[in-house]
Length: 146
Image (cartoon, rainbow, N blue to C red; front, side):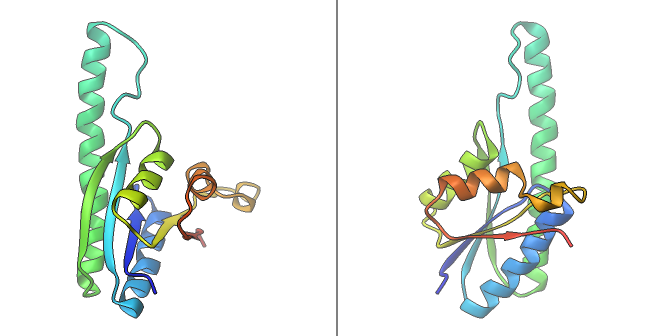
């Protein structure tokens, strides 16, 4: 049913819950899995030497965070006996990177976490998850925190 599952991660506990759910689905359907992390390469709007220094520091930290999150996710898949490919995607918004990756990688399903934090926020989806749902034609399984 699902031949290729896309799993966007961000290093959060909710993203790890999505990884756990994707593991179960991948095992049930013998699916290929691709784990992605989306980085906005140009989050600053300033100019000049201060901007260049801030940009370099940001990209270094963002790449380290992305590599760590992807490593954790891939390790979970590996322990479960599921092979997962991975990629760091650059996009100006996380949701756009996820949606475009889903299309370009020809996935059948996106499994991602939602980031509700308090009682009121738990009633709505995270902004990235909501935007992905609004902009993709692919099925999306949104995993909420417990």
